[in-house]
Image (cartoon, rainbow, N blue to C red; front, top):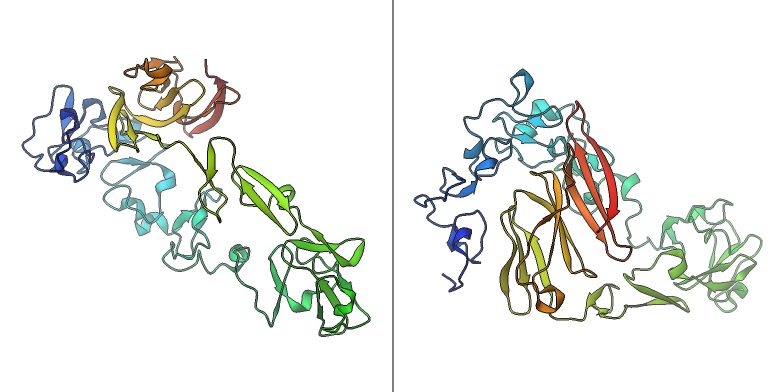
Length: 405
């Protein structure tokens, strides 16, 4: 309907390739090609995805009527949760508020009432739901009972303005109770509530008690010298303020280069990049010919942002779990979890335009372990990947590294 032309094999593949989803309409009468399985909805998937325990058809018809595949009449290995409809999901998907099974059996009360989350990656809500740790104290009620936002211990580090009447703002922006100022304890964490303390006299607006920047009188007598933002009291002179080197202390927000200035800092970018804005410190590429590379399962595609065009890079793979790109060699690396291997190919248009189409080169890393993620360190020419071995009663994971060649 948009007038865009796409490959015929992208028709009824569960992907909106046209941009208006018109390639996914009226699939009921569509005839799938040989070597594929036709879902009840008419969509086509690779035949080897039939009865593999994963929902590849959106209507789950590829997992209906399948025989048990594991000892004891189980449809899933012990390392995965077996849904009531016999689909297999990761234990990390249990009780997370999302219906991963498709029949809500991974969120059933019988499962979640006494369920314990993986506390390294998840937060256990008061209602036993598990949410990602990055969702804690983000201002959104992800738990559904508010317990991810009402935990004062976890949310105390969230930046918020200090109460001018009851709190004192430390040099590191932390808020403490005014009663904690000059109590001989480092309540701020950077000692800024103790460094400028004078216990025997008071200060006036005229003289500022000799403080270089400003002073605060204390309720029980005495005063404390404080500094403007970006400064902290000198440990050897209780009235003198020193510049805080945000670059050295790691309290800056620069994504590339941090330069310390008097009372503040400045962000800059390496060659080929520029600041995205004047606030965030994030650097973006200067080149406007940016290409986004992504996977749709059995294929790797690329999208040219400049001309809004999509093109094929690799086709005919099985289940691509992860991919990364090395700008130094102009190669793409990807992990295929179905074949349990890692492959690579030159990017289309690599080698000054000589490469016209991608070609998968298997790195022959097949084994019992399934690769789940990978990353290319193109500076040191290393390839890192994570793999999971589910052959035993409990899954085992490890991080591996090898040279890219």
